[in-house]
Length: 114
Length: 319
Image (cartoon, rainbow over all chains, first blue to last red; front, side):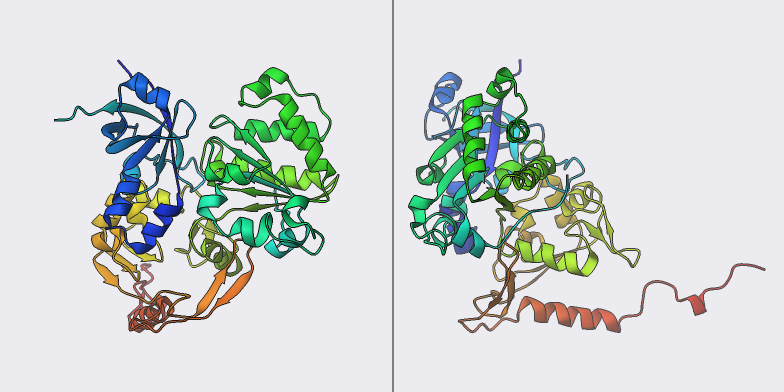
């Protein structure tokens, strides 16, 4: 049965921009681009605890992220863009040359900790 | 629709008393924008600085830029085009359905207040970011904002300007524009430029796997493009010019380390208002500049025999 759909929006943050210039191999850059920010109520509803791993599934693929509470409206997920979001993003540009980098429909499922 | 009514950031600093950011988060992504050009500076015709300006922010979420805004309008994701269309109708004094506006997450009174402020200002500017141009509607959203700015000139001076992303991306657009006539997605295979976004644009070519070699300059598509595009770059011979090891350089056959433009080598960068600025290097680098490497590649390619058959060597094929 399909789960709840969220709108995932990839964007930029200051720290991400700084770390791009420090180096993308750094642990700090990796942590930034591997963390999604969700609405608190959405997390409760999906049974996700802050700081736990989740699997994000879009039409294009899936990726594992750390999930944190964020100041975002219900139904929206924010993530600083990076290599993990490449696996989720839209591939069709609708004839514009611009990939859909925001507003992907995704499902999120918690990954049980071992 | 068509055309861009714009100005330089110097004019914004000296004249703009109404500033609207749409789908952008300058506090984090363009941290000097507020302080150097838009809201904090005292301008020639705005001696009061921040007090003399109104700043409105339109976005789908509460970003760091909200703190700097006088008014924040939180629009539902993917509803930007509808809001801009409603604003254009209100600007012209047409009736707008309250229920339709509420679907966007805003109220009609909020939009009417925004239009009244826009009409009252002496010099208005709309800065639109990738929250508008890379979401549902894409270029139609940008066209709608540019049209809104153009139509506002029936009432007061109004301009619009995109908030560009990566460093000197405006420069790439500008150079392609004055060399080929088009800003991106240009195909030169027939010996003359052809423009067709969706067919000749980078993402589409990479995702479809329509290329058999890639030359990447000042970009890291291996960390930003859709995965099938990255797979194409890994499959074909890819050459990367970059000062650093990047995701793209790792999957490339050849990575030439170059100096950092603007820090170790000179050049010209276009500011996001498309004003060219000369760059003065402050450090020395043991590596060549991008320009030098490209010139040497061009010289080496020129020495090679043309791959097309020359007319004099072709047989007519007619008996």
